[in-house]
Image (cartoon, rainbow over the protein chains, first blue to last red):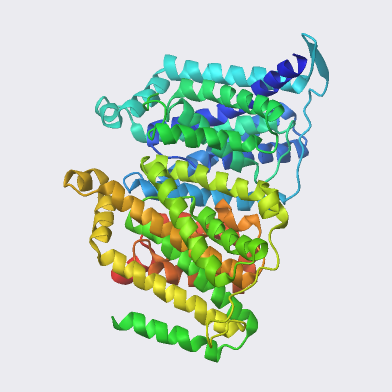
Length: 285
Length: 302
């Protein structure tokens, strides 16, 4: 029972990260119909920028702000320089561009920071006892911070004018344009938010897992699984799907097979597509 | 009709002039990767479907030749067609399932399939030896009076298969199926609406595409003599994608030219080796942004 609870808790921690990354992916897909294969590399860059910032003497939270802002700027640049000009091109083109960005960012990180694993120290190094379970404080901080950010995002999307504009654009770009929404600005803001979410997740998980150039590859793939599971473009789907996948993986890795733990996610994806070629849900934000 | 014959004649003369062992091996590898690039071009360039499982099939073909030879003593000349057949059969089944998903979904689905195949090759240690890979794979044995032990002979053998591949692709492009595929590429809904059997054509394209990947993989295993799971990983697909993009997707000779330029440069220039993926990634983005139909497109609209 204690093992089970421990694994569920681990699942919740990983799930927070999965959900944040998947949320960004689904937002971009919803508003721009781009499957951003480079999304995990934004997550990776977030972790690296925070690493450099803490090395330069910044506090963990200050480093987080720097990393999130930096990656958001990169996201905006990608939208402006790559995805916007490809808006009216065949869908193949933006996919191939995303793959190119993915390769580029990862190779850049490798050239700048090297192949070695890097580590960020968390200011919350202690261990807390929670209902009989021993948990590092950083994990609790991570859970809380991720939940707070998700809450803020949901509030932004549903309760503010800018958020409504994003949702409107996702539902019907022409309609949104007709009622006077600047869809071009919406695309830019969405990319900034999406990149920021990925970076935030990267900085949160960095003290637990390590920082390395290829850390974004698996998370992108997992995020795609989640987004397909929850519906391409669906915000609640990404939110819940992230936690579900992480808990399933955590339990599967413990009780079934640790060797094939990573295979679980892709098997799930292949199964969904085999029986529902268009994903589980209709696209909606 | 003149241009391909001239190209073939020049290619046939190269090994007589270039006697450097190292360059001959690079040339042979380039022929092999060009076969794989032609395969990707069939599904991507002709049918307009981005398959990210391509190198997984390259791996299946390679491992089929390698394991049949090292575990069952099957000679290369039986292993190679067996590998191609295995790829075609797997491609037919997997294609039938994956192609029901369209556009982005197809790309994501095949990405997952590619990773599953790669992970299985990597983790199924009792069969594939996992990370260690397969060593001591026998190369192609003599065929009648022909022997394939020298680098020159092997480069001619690879060239022969590449010429065959290009001829087959040319034939496919002019066939009714080829026309159907191009219609699908332009608009799948429209092609279906005028009564074309879209699914059958796409499945055919996918099967041919992965059969060529398997052929390239089988040749690769026989020529190199050892094989690791990285031959099947997704990065190989990305490399092949770049070859196709540089040359021009949908064109006949583009993927071959693209492979020669990109693979050749990456082997010869030391700078490229260190910054290979930085440049490859940037090249993909710039190509798709400014030259989406590659060199072939630039040549046509010169």
